[in-house]
Amino acid sequence: MTDARDPQDGVTLGAAVRAGRTTSRDVLEAALERASAVSRLGAISHLAADIGQQQAASIDARRGPLAQDDRGPFCGVPFLMKDLGAAAKGLPVVCGSRALKPVPADSDDVLAQRFRKSGLVPFGLTTVPEFGLSLSSEPALGPIARNPLDPSRTPGGSSGGAAAAVAAGVVALAHATDAGGSIRVPAACCGLVGLKPSRGAVPGGPSFQNHLGGLASELVVSRSLRDTAVALDCCSGAAGGPCPDPDLGKPLADRLDIPPNGLRIGLCSDVSEGAPIQPSYREAVHHAGSVLAAAGHQVTDIGPEILNPLARNAALVFDRVISVNLARTLGDVSAVEPLTAAVVQRGLAITARELQDAELTGVRVAHNLWRLFDEFDVIITPMLSGPPPSIGSFPMDHRDVDLHWRRMSDFAPYAMISNVGGTPALSIPHGIDDRGLPLSVQLIGPMAADGLLLRLARQLQKAVPWHFAAPIAGLPR
Image 1 (cartoon, rainbow, N blue to C red):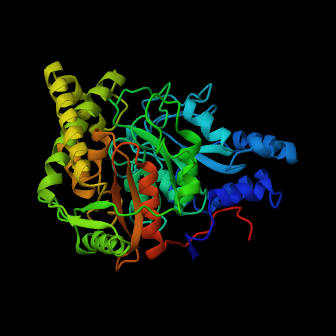
Image 2 (cartoon, rainbow, N blue to C red):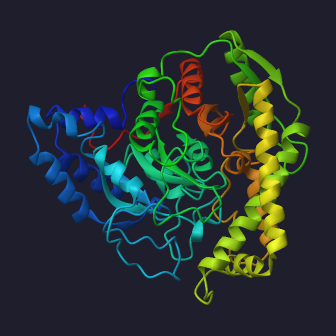
Image 3 (tube, rainbow, N blue to C red):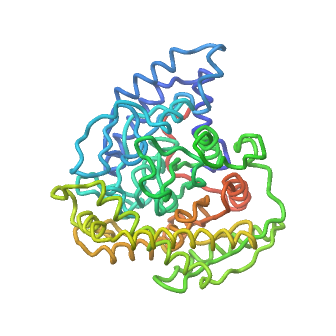
């Protein structure tokens, strides 16, 4: 087991390549070997070894001191894109659906360009539920993504394949997107770090555009705060929105170990509606609060009656935006799963008045959330209500959209608030339950507080270290 406070992450792997202790090609071959060994987990939906090998060879050819500055912090580190969101050249994004033809992208989106510039080497796509419509990743197209910590359970969704690949050690970090918890929920299911960045901090186009009304953000799931911070440093900015901690000047990764002082922290450990939070998941939130109180922060309990109305209204906004977007995207539903077809039908039935009402509701959610940050600097909640459920718990072979959304809200009750509010939110591991599965907490901050959340998470990590059963493929001993 590796203690996550030790520098065993993508940055370490990139440094080893730059120093000549290994090569990008050797690391990629190790990742491919590991991917084959854990293929039963269904984490990877499309493998493109040749694309990865070409980029790895190019990186290895640029050796010597003159090449050091342009090889990036993740120099030669294998990487997996998600089958949803920003596209990378040569990889055929189909959003987990038979309805889309697997046509390789002819160019990189801006985010993929930034991933490559950081040194990352994309070599495949990770499994998602069809069009990202679930908190599990079991597309009828296949494969079914399974949790490396317990293959009978889901690794979450919609970035479930990404989280499974990282937790299994195939890659150190992987591309992920989040429109309703899809970075944070899989991170929590697999004991990883998952940051949904502030709205506008990371580019989401041009092909991904803004068709989800600002709900979606993109970045990575990873094993370390450092990898997440470095990925954000490499990918943020020049995106028509705020950059994380723009006034502090230094890269986030250089400030992780500067502890924030005297924060006002609001703690909400329960819900007032929907499925109850299981005791160990409530206790993880309280324990995080006690750690931070001992570190000198002011911790105050927030009743769920404050956050639950925000969560309820955020779910309404999510429903209407997702439904209308999918109806606009899909003209033919003959090849999609029954739930997807029902979401499209719902989107077609939503009136312009109802859509505008949802937009106004979203503004009110954002405003009320922002007002909470007049009183608190950070809010901490459970990320999940309980452990990752069994495979099959989020079926999409039915047409009851309300039931499906309710299952998602019950599992991750406070996930959608930050998507609607545009604020950063971070899921980190915090302990182990009696099944040996990771507990987690969610940290929510005001706009552009991404760096603050990462630094606060470092304080929690030092008190409750993280552990990983599987080493990262290709990492020199």
